[in-house]
Length: 237
Image (cartoon, rainbow, N blue to C red; front, side):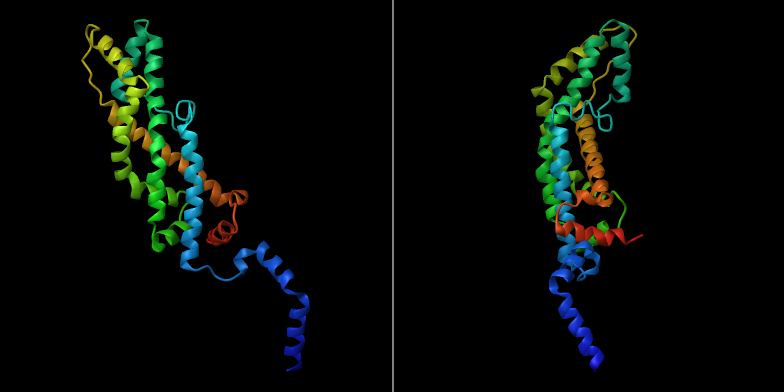
């Protein structure tokens, strides 16, 4: 009995402030996180990543000068590009590639609400699996959850953006000149579908980069909740 009283006195003397300091330094030693906390932490992390990465892609050259997401020509148009360069129209070929990326940069501005809604609608089962999953587990969840809605949202926006940045006119000129070259087979590419798919790929790639940073870089965890939630993930290995 005396030992218990002495121990209790020690805790009292140690003080609440010191205990709180220890708990803040080692959040995994505190109270176990409940389901809502885990979900809220992942949602905060994903929202931070979405805002950061989508804004990068919407800037001028967000696609065009980022080799990870730069939109290149599909196989059907690579032969068009080569032919134009062979007949002295390299500048037109260069412009054709650039305007596809400009259209993606313009259209991807529509992505944020779709991703935010996907995060908002996450369930606890999703959150737990994502927390204990691979470095791109959250991105995979977003991709599975939003691809259909994102495509339907992107497609008309991309079509409008192709016109807005002048890509439709540039590519009309390119295709007309190519089809007029002797011994070539006429082409009629669906640029809207292609740019939509590539813009989506670019968004997911960049989100995956940010997710990995949050998982592996302690300084990327900018709130107490992020620190507590991802401390649990750190222990999975």
